[in-house]
Image (cartoon, rainbow, N blue to C red; front, side):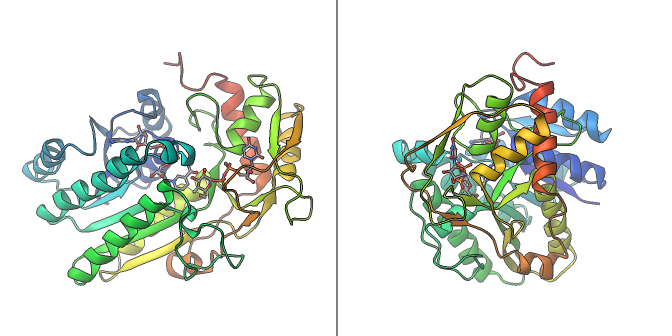
Length: 347
Ligand code: NAD
Ligand code: UFG
């Protein structure tokens, strides 16, 4: 079992991955500034896993803090063996309005992390990349060989970090073990309903919006476009249960630690598409609540269909998704109904 640094471990995907990694026996140090998460998430992670983790509260971009994290682990005789790097900003619209913030946190933050890792001889990294870097895909399902052509600043920052990692791996191919995981649309929650997605303000993404309509926090869903070239006219995405995604991280880490140094670039998705209207119906069935909606204009920047070709991850990691859209809705509803205001006010 390894000692791991998890940046952004209190966030949506990070918290679920921490549960899986603790359960697998790894020792975790979580670095998070809680700019988009709550310390309550980490308390619940420990409660679910029945094991504790070490928390360092701070900013990824702080080189002094990063040095302290690695140096104190070295001094304790328990060096950090690998890093799973979730910390970052992820809202597409915000990235258009505040590009420098995105370049700073996502790119400069990653560079600071990599420099400190290198200085301490820690050269195993799993990086949170995104299907957003495919832009408007030319072929669906999308293979990893599809062109990287982001269409917004957020996507450019993810593509740039992937570029930086490829350059680094090429500079010392016998040293670095790196996995760039291109997530499709992570949704759902831990089946306990104790941890889940807790967006600030009005959700940008479909799933949290739908679940807030179901719980009565919002009146109705706006379906962005009913005239897409899809079977029912609404947009199609590859939704992946966050627990499947968490298990994908464990599999990627095992593959990196158990094999020769290499750079892996993998889609993490189900390979199955669901339309907005299918999601609405599945969520209504899981929750027993109505989800009123109206079809409005298309959202600028959206693609009609994005679905992963997940076959390379299956081949390289022996991992594939196990959970259905109904499971995503059931577990998402368990979280939403037990925590109508998310982590706010929770203890
Ligand atoms: P999230 O916002 O819930 O989690 C990110 C975490 O990083 C939060 O806990 C936040 O407080 C922390 N953080 C942000 N800036 C930080 C900084 N400067 N220093 C320290 N901590 C900082 O997001 P998530 O959905 O869990 O996403 C995790 C990663 O996966 C991100 O890099 C995101 O870009 C990527 N990703 C997410 C999705 C998605 O749909 N959720 C899709 C593709 C890729
Ligand atoms: N949608 C609606 N109404 C809403 C929100 C979304 O109809 O209120 C539709 C969208 O038009 C799209 C689908 O629901 O057809 C999914 O939209 P999301 O915003 O949930 O997800 P996206 O596929 O647009 O993007 C998400 C993240 C990106 C990430 C991408 C791939 O926001 O950061 O998944 O991982 F890159």
